[in-house]
Amino acid sequence: MQPYSLNTKKTQLHIRNMICESCIKVVKWELERTGFIQVNEVKLGEAVISYNEGVINLDFINAVLKRNGFELIENKELILVEKIKSSMIQLIFYGNNTNSILRNSDFLSQKLELPYPTLSKIFHKHQGITLEKYIIQLKTEKVKELITYEDLTLSEIAYMMGYSSVAHLSKQFKLVIGFGVAEFKKDRANARVPLNKLF
Image (cartoon, rainbow, N blue to C red; front, side, top):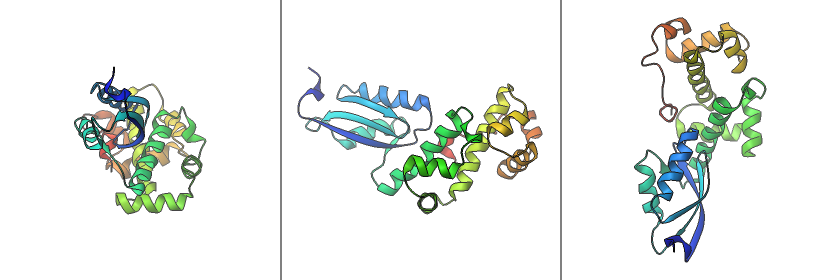
């Protein structure tokens, strides 16, 4: 009989630094391999689990997550900030071209059911940069990724990422990373930034 089969507690975890599909697999694997936790569902920034409070506690769970670069979040506003990050990463990196169709503000407001100004204010309070700047940095990282693949023209990338023109993309790219697209293509060695290191 599994340790979590008696006196189980079902709870939703909010987890910092889950930024990709691989993170979902790692979190699920690491929690389950303890033998004390049943994972019911995992998605970016969240997991629903069942465990026996008489055997383990949230400190134990947090220690398991921290070993892999993740961390539990309990503050409501910080949970919201993480949801904002996860939502924008989902849209920009896995949205199948929807970023050129949806406005970021509309997308976030609909998904998180709060006015964009409220989301922006809370994000700035805890991250020290505006939500708009964070979104621009995310888009720039996606542009770097797409350039690296060499499957699309710059015009196609500009359209996919919601830029009005190649000139607009190029200008913003240079403002964010300090050099232009042509220079990036020549020397890409140290230009990519892990998403959890942006802010």
